[in-house]
Image (tube, rainbow, N blue to C red; front, top):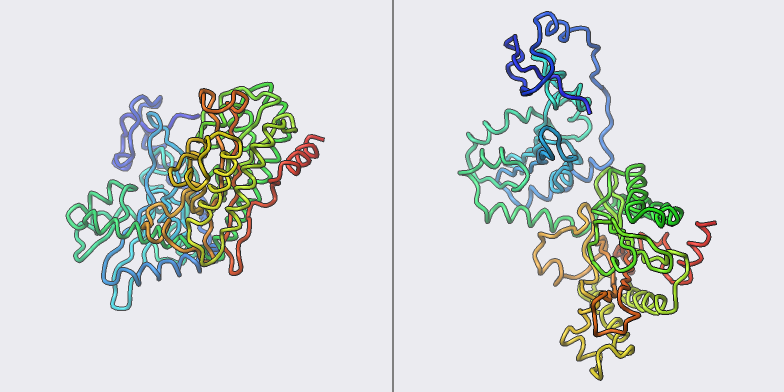
Length: 487
């Protein structure tokens, strides 16, 4: 990675606005070099750009937001870079609220809805092209020569369908602003400082909750993105099966890296840290260290999802026999989880309570645990009443899915877990059974086995659609699929 060219002692007034580097190799910039770098560059302005694919949808989302908070200034930041170490940063991902309302993913961007008599006027505040007069474009670590060209404000307006202004002027404007203001907190400390005396935590939380609940029902663009994410994820799982022999020779990280390659080829990134849990690691719900051994005869629990370039993620889990064939006990536990998932998916339909799919899946698992003699002589109803099945089922059976893997997390309880399903809702159905290696309440042969099966389910007008159905789920189908991929 190259060092930035920031001079320690800039020799001209133009360079004084550029961030300095303490131990740069060049002592300064000569007047001649500064003059040379200002000229001789072609005009690269882009004209006649078509709006982004979701521009119509983001406009509708902003209109709904405007209707909810009439007469109030609304501020939604994208966020800023976060330092990883010294002068290197973590990969940037725009805040979900900002990307949802604009379709833009630019760091430092801020969407502002100014109240008008008829609603709101939206303006997107962005960094313009790097300044070539003061040397920013080649001397600053975030200049375009270092990190790549960004769109001009005029280009951004064409793409996003929103008037654009220089974001560097926004804090001063907000300081002088009057009237009620709401801000999505936690993304931009500079914006929050400018609004210190104008906002309240309660009002800002109402804005965050509204934007979370707005995503409960997906529009057509979002559904298409989720399907794209699931399709790419299925190909990522196929990639993994094809290289399980290489993973056996190395570790779970070979699996992690293989899936990550697919995510970067077909999307923006992974939607969350991949869980590549082989053997007893499958009993740890969020095993993301991925540094363990991969052994034939054991199971691989792979929980991973591709995030599309427009930031919608899949969330899929398959539990696979590493050598391609389940043992009788592995199959018994796997088939129990499959049966529970089938019951859960069947409960996903318009008009159903959100909790129905969880309750249906948990009942099946409780029945199996009772049948296997793990709960003494208790009835299934009593087990469910006391929640005793949770020793081995551990987690809820699913969650909302969208731009965030655990989407709509700030929604009110009455609209989420106590809500009613309707067409356009997308959720995961992911029951599991996990028998810890040190659990003395189960037969020894159960210990160290963990199974989860997870799919992404869209509520439709007449039932549901499994967006991740390109991956097999039944144990016999899983074995046949693996055999085919391994040749």
